[in-house]
Length: 127
Image (cartoon, helix red, strand yellow):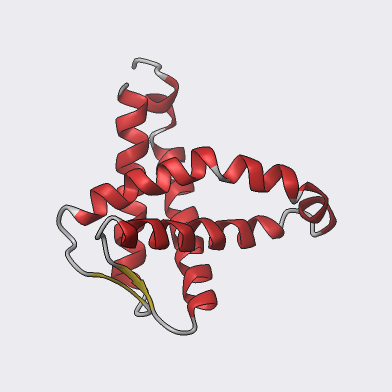
């Protein structure tokens, strides 16, 4: 359970930094919306991403893994679409593709850095 909460917090921080850094991405109310968007983002990555990764495996291999950036873009955009259906307005301005790409890139980088910092806590090791 603590791993789930820690992963949720990492997603929330990553999404918040993407909204804060990128001018093409805006969040209507930053206080509680970011927590719910982080939950949606985690669910999208847990449920949809494996299916898309399996279906696009030849493209991932052909591009030496660079196609995963496209998958990250799709996951970020899908989080925005699902969030808007729940009233959580994560707006991706025009050009949507490039802003979603940059948002997915920022979220991926922040998630990797925070996961590396907190890897002992995520593995369940005690100091």
